[in-house]
Amino acid sequence: MGTTTAWFGQLPLTDSHLGRIHFVAIKPEYQGKKLSKPLLSAALNKIIELGHKEVYLTTQTTSYSAINMYLNYGFEPYDPDNTDQKGWLMMEDILNRKLNV
Image 1 (cartoon, rainbow, N blue to C red):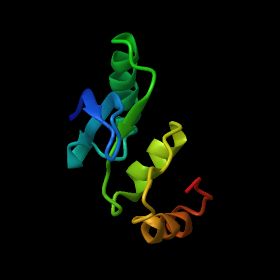
Image 2: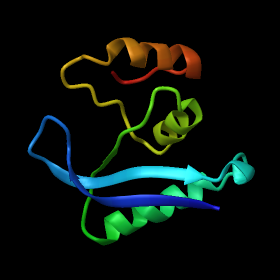
Image 3: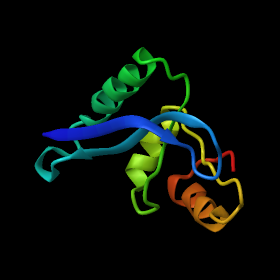
């Protein structure tokens, strides 16, 4: 029905090594059944179990529902060099929520 991948990675533009969620994917015929949340929770719990207190992920700007879910989990936009400001401002409009950018 779905899959996710988690490992340890280097946060872009830093020397920080953190837990990383690589992707969360649900087969099209199972999407909309609230399966991504338990899948993401299991991956986050495993990362915590292995000793990481911070996690990052990357996503596409067209994945609005995924971005909204990640924000609900407490993830925040990471844009250290302000190259993605325009995209995050668009996300604020699309998701109708204020982001900490």
